Every structure is written in C-alpha cells, then in structure tokens.
Length: 218
Ligand code: DX5
Ligand code: ZN
Image (cartoon, rainbow, N blue to C red):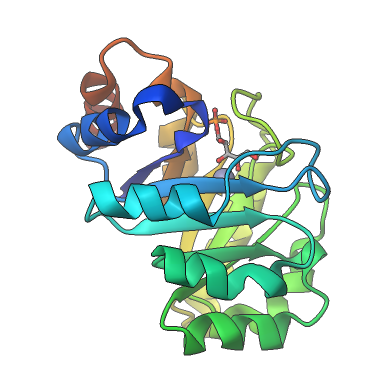
C-alpha cells in the first residue's frame, strides 16, 4: 500500500495543529517536514522546535528531510525533537557511512537523498544500509515546483536494484506530486509520496488527500 506523506511546507503555519489534523483526517500516513538552512538550499524554513511542536499534535511518523549543510551536527537535535525517520542529502554529508550509523544508533530510521542532477550511482555503497531512498523530483528548496519527468527513470532504476540485490529500502519521491504525477511515480516503483502544494493549497484538505488515494486505488 502506497504511503502519502503530506509536506507541511505549504501549510498555514498560523494553525499548523489544525492543518495536521486535517491531513490525518484525510488518511495521511506520515508527516513530511522540510528543514532548510538558507545555505545548502536558498530557502530557510523550520528547525527542531517546530518538529517538536508537530510531535505533540500527532502520532503519525515524522519524516524529517534535512536540506542543511553539516547535517551531522543536528541529528541529535532532530532525534530529540521526535523525528522517526531522518533523511540526509549525500551532497551535504561527506562521511555518509558515519552519518547513517549515528541516525540508526539514535533509534531513527535512515533515509538518503540526492539532488536531481546527482548520479544515482553515488548511493550504491550504502543502499544495503538504508531504510529509505528519496528521489528528489524537483531541485530542493521550494514547494510548488514542476515535476522533473526524468525522475521516473531514477525510481525505476532504484526499484530494479532493490529487486536484484534484495534490498529493503522504501522508495520515496518528493516534488511536484499531484493527482496526475502520483500514478506515474507509483507505476515506476515509488512507495511513499511526499505531497505539499497539491494538498495544502486546497480548501478541503482531507478531501485532497482522499482524492489522491482514490486515484491510486481506482
Ligand atoms: C522541496 C521539498 C518538498 C516540497 C514538496 O525542497 O523537499 O518536500 O515541499 O512540495 P510540492 O509537493 O509542492 O512540490
Ligand atoms: Zn521534502
């Protein structure tokens, strides 16, 4: 069963608790939190304090996507804030093996990701170690961007490596997912869909989550 992970980047932060309840009502599986530092990516968003606040209003797994330089320095903070899964960018972690070990030792699930123009082969040495691989289908930094169609090949490649080597990771996709691109990425092999604008820009948020779910089932 495909998981839907609403990204709160496009949520209304003046009533974040209610917004999270709305996606829960619609049947969301995880909450995706985009952490940006204005350095690794050109935008600044939220830090551990907001993750902690979200932790207090939901029992859903918190899927924390770190788009920050020197991610190693902040793993403890996000773990303590209540992250269940921590995903790091290979471009921001020169000692990936150690980074993943730290995440796992804290008791969190491990995720790795890479920018759309970074070759997938860079992941190969650690694929057996990770719980999740995130394919960025837009350049990280902002919500509401257009899906990069080449991402479909990348999802297929990861799916075929998983089959071939009996790896266990989930394949997550992030950026430009909506009612049209969702079925395409699922057909390519995606297990978890991060969705921001297509959910939070709608007046009826629970219905927006359900509409995507129905599209995938139907
Ligand atoms: C982009 C973020 C995404 C983003 C997805 O850097 O990682 O999670 O919020 O938003 P949409 O679905 O609007 O592309
Ligand atoms: Zn994200």
